[in-house]
Length: 129
Image (tube, rainbow, N blue to C red):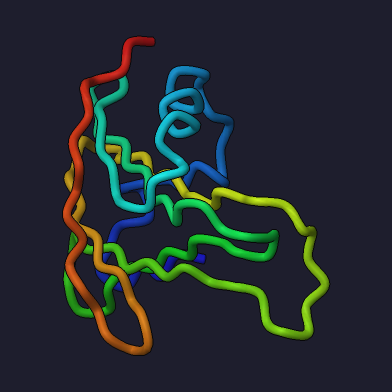
């Protein structure tokens, strides 16, 4: 769930909340095995991929929230299953997509153990579609 204290809810939409264009889905699938934040452009607007990389089982996910004190910053966490959770025993590649609706650029920070670290955004060529 995205907390929009300092963001207009019309600034972006998450890929998990919309139907993905095939060009964007294919781009995400080609990068999902490498953890990091990636950026491209689709139909003239920024699209970001926040990938957790390869994980040993189901139950992992990428959770996003707006930074409570800074506009244009998204915080993300890689969540993992607890020891009591029953999860599928298969390698997974959790990720989330962020579509900028107004052409606005975002910064991303990884939150681990209560600490935030700025993520380097890796640019990729614009998508055709």
